[in-house]
Length: 394
Image (cartoon, rainbow, N blue to C red; front, side, top):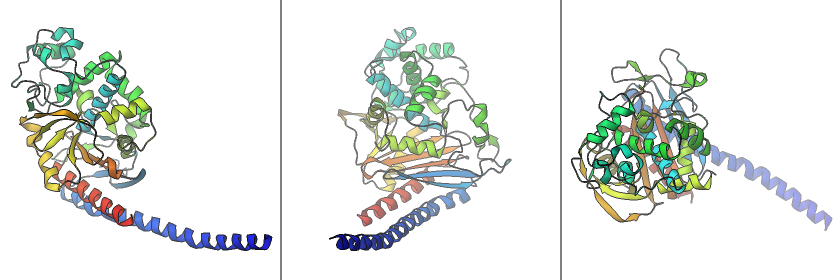
């Protein structure tokens, strides 16, 4: 019996030596293929738009892959890494929506509340008929894209809101608006008895495991903050302004952003309430212009064709009013969905997308603003091929 056991152990030992190199070879082959797929989609974009630096992170079933291109700054020539900080523009809005969702779970607000219920100074104004849900879905009635230039403080902002007159009844049109989500962020922070920056940087980011993300980049991290470049290749970074933090003010890295995407796909292990807050932001409330409007996130039934994604991310969705139809009952979070968001500042461009059922997601960050269609196309090419590769393995 002992001899048989020893013989069996020898056989298993030999098999392990044979199987292990093969499995490593397969893993290396997969990584090589993934890199080829990403490079094929990203390098032409960097070249065409003369982008100094780009950072791409891909998540496949919880495994993260990082691909870095070029430099963080023309002056310092520092190479882009997964820890380089980029301005993510309007992707910041998804964090604001998540924070509001978290506050609702804690009973500090409800998306069904009217705006004036939380801001007494706006009682008797149009905001008596505008809900927090309207703010989170760009359906308040025609708030402008930007806070007017002449407004420089919250007192002036409240005066502006008090006198604002909607063009449409709340919930009938989607008009993309920084003041809309900014106002939601302001109300959320107030309900939590803190500042918005404090709530994001000291509460939400730590809960998500995001240790390298900021509204206000600390001095010690400025060395990692990429320099942005505008269309004329002049150096530029986002300027602080009223509601900037809530609408477009987050700076983050590809390493942190892919953690965020994983948490949205329920891959990361995080606080139960925060996890539920994330998933709740994937609920669909309105249909407009080819998209299902979630809480800031935009979704499409998967599989989806590229032209549909391009239509949903076209300029008209950001600069024009689009009729909105309410989804009744609310569309519960879908796992077979393409969920995405773009973000831009004058000197940076970003895009992220994920498919929960497939457990694949992508983050694309750049330190130059370039058009949205190439971002969406690159992400589609990458995720589509990764999905096909996964299906062939299964």
